[in-house]
Image 1: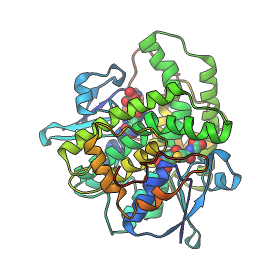
Image 2: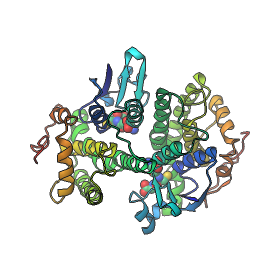
Image 3: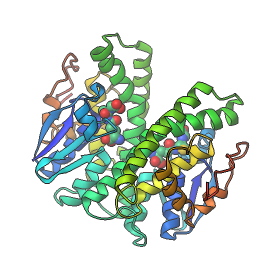
Image 4: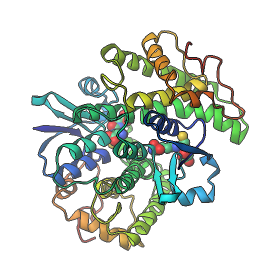
Length: 223
Length: 223
Ligand SMILES: N[C@@H](CCC(=O)N[C@@H](CS)C(=O)NCC(=O)O)C(=O)O
Ligand SMILES: N[C@@H](CCC(=O)N[C@@H](CS)C(=O)NCC(=O)O)C(=O)O
């Protein structure tokens, strides 16, 4: 059985969980708080980051959400999520990279720092200006998602793909932390409601990170 | 013919160029300075980042070095660079991600900011403390490369792979900017000398970024 080292608000682990869920791959969750820099975890992954996946019986350790997703995409045929022609696949990967870097750096990372890490580690209050800037950038980025959905059924093309799962992973963490203003984003909201209702998404939405409570709409499919 | 939008010190473009070189794929270079945020470039890539590859005759635009490398790996069989079993491939991708994120953030990005962007854009002097920190982290990271090369012929395993090309791309930019102290890294130095002597690497080493001169050893295979 695979074990996934993660914590409830890690967007990269959420991406992996959505993929595993869609593909029907079973796994156990192992709680890991990378900011604690546990020795045993650093021995497993010198970069000290979640997600890490371990299959002890087979002696396998997989590190980094990109490497993990490509691994399961290659080894499990069911529910292909990097699909289509090579050009389609390049477009899916472009969007995955864009959410993992740009959306993460502009929106998710500052929200996590202000609303989660400061609370858990320094017991300090969030900086209102940083939160405001992150929420403003979230609006711009959701405008781009709206634009994509004006032209396509799903973010990466005609079918659901790893681009949608990655986007939903990051957006869901930002939403948990109160960083998403859904007004004016009807397109993206409809797309996100469809993802929220998938069996792969339900377990994530019901989990809570200690100390931090999400807004009431967070886990509602109808929001 | 493919066109590659890049500038001489972009490590992600260097990674793509090394892959194209190894695979024998021809391309033209188009100089792009992403910090100028040119409208035509932003129309092509809303993220405003290099590298971007365009094949105008076929109407193709590829964005993001990960997506670009996977595309050519899928479409051109020659000189496979994400090779072996799925587990080998996951290890190669882990290392690519590690250099693109950790080595880039700790070493390459601060060096580029202090030694290139400040000079070109703000005409300001570099901050000696930031440079010192980046060079100290470079030493730690090269220790890890030494450790990998104690156990393997190449970074990702028994054969040369995208992990080596990615590492060489980032290290070469850091070296150009005077950020690498080669003393005490004999393993890594030997591995890097072998890469430097490859035909795919020669054109990169002979190019110069205006205003900034590399140290004398930079383009020497014997250094
Ligand atoms: N490229 C990595 C990024 C993983 C990552 O940044 N994880 C965060 C948690 S969401 C982490 O472990 N940060 C701890 C640290 O950077 O020390 C991936 O896709 O897996
Ligand atoms: N994930 C991207 C990163 C590309 C990237 O960060 N490129 C830098 C130049 S080395 C850039 O264009 N930066 C401009 C900016 O961030 O505005 C890739 O792998 O292609």
